[in-house]
Image (cartoon, rainbow, N blue to C red; front, side):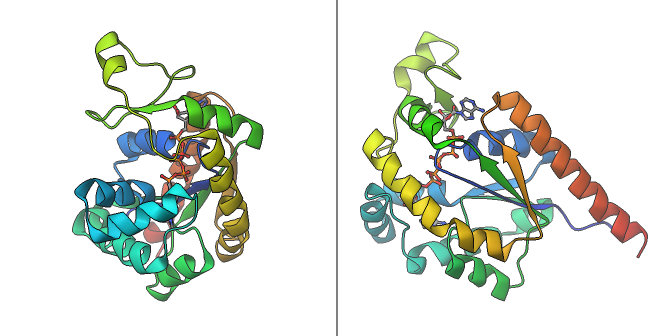
Length: 222
Ligand code: AP5
């Protein structure tokens, strides 16, 4: 039998590099990237009732209530593409109740990557972040500048990417970190996220490769 596909969670403070690493992981491992923040921003863009409500919390740097987030992520996770190719959950779960919602469905990752970046670097990363609405690519004015003028001229900024708001988001992050650590104690691997993007990725990539290898071996010996 084939091993079931890899299931990965990625966690870390705001602007710790989750989205950036997910793009690279997706390309190399073919996992389906499910970002709770991206799903919420899509609801906002669509003008849905959930999106309107979610935006009020996101503007305050607070967690969006479970009534909105839990089903939204669960439905995406249970889609056939994620079940067949494996998944990469980005920014979810962020609280004890979200983690328990997954545990109750017997949805467990193989590994949880926790990106660690010193607080003082996060503000600079947030205020310099830009997004390409055409390709979805994440840029940074200083660390990952756009390739050309055409791209540079169309870059946008997220509404919650201000110095004031990232401080609130960081507070929320620290309030909830412990519930994540305790739920996935045996699966968490901490990765230093303040190195160059490619160096962070080579560490992440090695971890995922050995996790995948372990799964394949356990199937082969069963
Ligand atoms: P979400 O969208 O998840 O935001 P976040 O957690 O604050 O994380 P970010 O997306 O800001 O950062 P990132 O870690 O992906 O960093 P990136 O790779 O872009 O959540 C937003 C809001 O939605 C929350 O505040 C909450 O309200 C709500 N929400 C989301 N999930 C929820 C949940 N589960 N429950 C309830 N509410 C929820 O990198 C950042 C910048 O740094 C970029 O410019 C990048 O180019 C640069 N960079 C990346 N890596 C490096 C590097 N190694 N060196 C130098 N620069 C780098």
